Image (cartoon, rainbow, N blue to C red; front, side):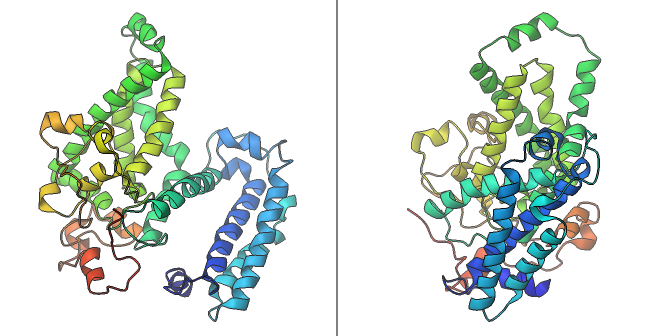
Length: 403
């Protein structure tokens, strides 16, 4: 496994070296194997909303696509073996693709009846990875603020956070919505007012939801910076030293549940219509990815109206002036009103993370960190990623402005 990770992190990535074919091969063969396992155990591994479209009758295009994915994975694995001295990526690709084929490949049939309502979201993870990656990776390459690799520093940690949040999407949703739905089921307040609110224009409802959830999130977020016990959880999120479309996934799972539980209260209790709720959920999902992304576009006056990457990057900045600033995720005006606004004109942070980097690396260490902080934190201050890279000016992760 260490050899595989070393190859994925290799600096020899030029075209013709075999690294590109090996990396793409692992991605496609892994997706193919996951799809086959999903075919075999849909009741366990697929979310209900996707299950009936992909794993029942409507397979006339899914199976040919899966066959094509596995075929291309085989070709990429062979290409890696032919081009690269280190064969780890190629053999891993062929191993994953062969396992998928032995399990039935594109002809795999379900080994169980489809009847469950709650399951793991393996299909949801890959669908999100494909869609968000296809959208944000090209944008970050074209409009990059920092010249960093796609598989940059600590990419494995953030991919695991991304995987866990999507794999357990239904469980997290049920836990997060429980407080709001419980209150809703046991209260009959202002039914006429709630009906009037739900009858508003959908666009207006989404705008109202943005404001009320951002107001709730602002104070929730500020509390997690203010109180040490809560900060121990939130420090995991701020431990990221590289910002891109996947960095926002790095959140302790207990903070995720508490944050969603708290911020969904106004959405459901005020009485907004279901289409507006779904519209906002999609919007905030894309927005949370966007504000963490490595996109250096200047939005000029719009930056003072709506949260952009530069605004939120200052929240993660290592500069002392940026500490405990810019809590809003939608409207910077909230920070202006409550005195936590910091947004120097045309400037970006020099780096990201927490001074001394006290939060340990790797997912399980970070999961345990809030509970055993004194035992698990780094005892000696370690340099920030930017400081380390300044000692290696040839590194492809060296931040360079894209002005």
